[in-house]
Image (cartoon, rainbow, N blue to C red; front, side, top):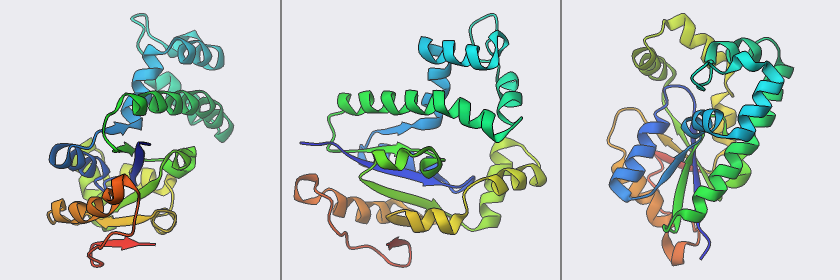
Length: 213
């Protein structure tokens, strides 16, 4: 039986990681965190290391072998072309690692958390896409508290991400994470996704909280 993939995406402070934790802790669905695994691969993968060193320079890694993030950040933000070059190294590595991870899973449904799902092209790896959304001011407050950053800094980061309406339009489902208990909403979603021996069907959803496009 083919393992189905539910991608979880959303903007800064939307709570996509919170939704991923709920999926794992309450429903037993393993979730692959693309951001966390990309950081791991940047250090552990010899192929990624050699390509980043060739692109950025030996100084992109510290003496202890860990990635020197300020050096990589300076290269990344110097130009859009630089960012594309780095992504051309890291994105394929993450996609391969994700594919291998899926093969090791025994659940009929797994999750993939990815903030830049559409920008990276990882949406092609998913059978269905769940977008986690929240009011702008709530996202802002969450991100400021989480990162200890100023309002201006978070606003700048938000301005660089995909427009919320566009992200929602391209997703199959949108869940509103406005502080209410999401357990029942996710139960309704999953009950539809996991019927008929894990074949994806139209779930019965609470339209106030989850929208099907």
